[in-house]
Image (cartoon, rainbow, N blue to C red; front, side, top):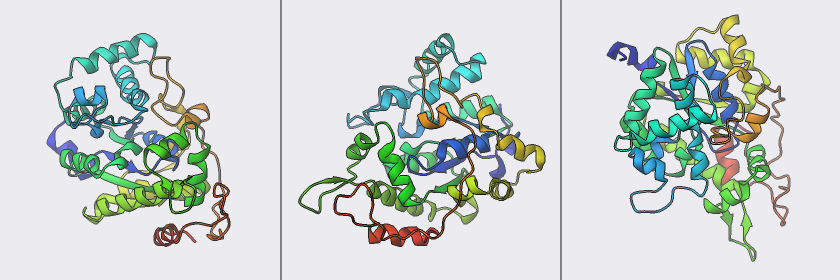
Length: 317
């Protein structure tokens, strides 16, 4: 059992907050490779109050949490298999199914605490983009872990939007989240709505927390200059970041969750990351023109003014 002193501010779990296709899988896994941290896949636990609700994928009002809910459980299944069986196989995932069902009456907070005790003294890092679907999910997380720390991970709206549209199931997800522009004669699937609303929600949530509990980082800068950005994050986390730690974080492919899992729990992270989990260098471009026509808009409009305004506030353009 972890002692109270082991759960002071600098030992509390770290949550990465960002909409899908914002480098969350890569950044979370990189940080999780730090020798003093443990990178979970997407657990999605705080999208539910109880484990029974979590497993069934329904809210208290009976509504479905997501059409994709069966695969949104994969991260927890893979985590339990790895932590309690030491491997991720069809059999160990079957064990994880039984582990979860045996805890059906427990709260998701209790389950998360059990996982924290299992990895103690390592610091947990987790990212679940699903937490941004409702403010109540973030509030539940904060109530359960009032001293948790948060990284607000950014990606340029043009890049994130294009990536969502390209992803398998991306258009369906956007429609389910009402990211549809109905202002014209023809409705258009518009990923800018997701980008804007998700980051506005994160900012509203973080503004209610003490400033020392959160950090904002641009994902493009991490990919372009990890030798500068990773030490900056580690300094905020009060963790060492010498050559050994930096080398470990620059090898995300070494994570036990950085590959496609067994047939009964294949995901837990973005499939594109799982198929190619290495760190890829990138150039950070500050000269993007927000008025440049967007390829997904038949009217050839550029970024929406509200998106441009928020992006500028977040350090783009």
